[in-house]
Length: 119
Image 1: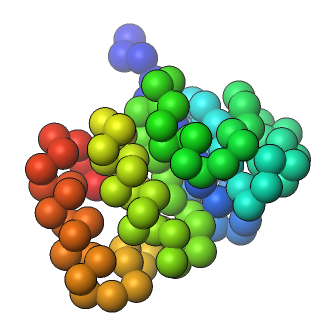
Image 2 (image 1 turned 90 degrees about the horizontal axis):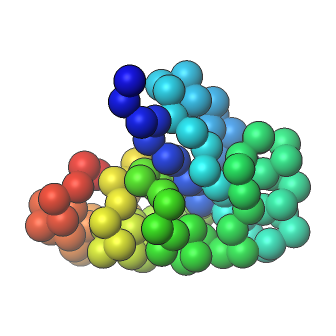
């Protein structure tokens, strides 16, 4: 039996909860969540059944025990979090829009294509 993917979700609002449910239905473990504050992350971890709460989305994308990062944050945070996740060897699933402008989207496509990860 294959080891389940370890998913972490940045952004724990309505869309983040949908991603958490979908990841579980696909057989993944919900390794952690990050929200706008550590307190909100702790509350969301309890509500969503995550293994832990991260103090920040940046800590989440740097965690060694995460395979896939789901980015469900406000739009202006998609690009920097996705780039950081790819730099840290994570696969990325990003809620739309990918970036807030064409230049940002182009940067992310280039980062993804050179990462060896799925994005």
